[in-house]
Image (tube, rainbow, N blue to C red):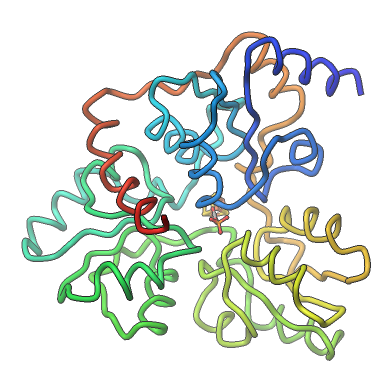
Length: 302
Ligand code: 13P
Ligand code: SF4
């Protein structure tokens, strides 16, 4: 409790806002001003009046906040909280893809480094990938999609658009197997199944809905069934349970844990505000170039 009081005090003193991803530890979600998916967090980061943003998530998310609010101080409580999927492609590899496919537009998942975004035409999140390809890129014949092969495959299944796709993946989501879903369905035959698009095709094929983490939360609030099987990182269950005391949520597997998302603790949030660390610093040129591709995504939504 003392830590929480101290965090709140420092937050006011520094005019800071705390943003947290849906996979954060429950106690971190509980002290945040906003908890959401990558799209929601980007919108918050772009619109906040605060002077300081404490970003409880992984590195690319804090970078995205810095790109959208370069005049603000953006802090990440643990600078080693990376996203292994985002690190599966670097700017050099994107440049090579562009050279090999000069006529192609480059679409990147938000789970990419700022340097990679700086090389891309357009950015998307799990919440808007399908609609953006349908609307914004409908006249494009060739599209490079980086880095998640499973999200790319999901978008292809939904839109018919083929991609020159990078073979990246999320090590946490590929741990969710079709047999996990089948087992949960057997145990809870009345339950609906919702999974994240980073899951493999075999898992997605067993789902009633394929949704971003925030869309999962909205679905959970609105759907009339009492039981849901959830195929994503288990952190999202905290919010779902808190918002729906009348419903029961089952993790597809308790092994779907993103260790990087769990690196942020309350202590680290406190130290972050006490010492203004770890500040996200990016070259102006990278901010400028990466901003174009994120802006196009945010404008599309508006
Ligand atoms: P969402 O944008 O759906 O929250 O997903 C982010 C992420 O890192 C999924 O693994
Ligand atoms: Fe990256 Fe997967 Fe963790 Fe999301 S769950 S941050 S994609 S490693």
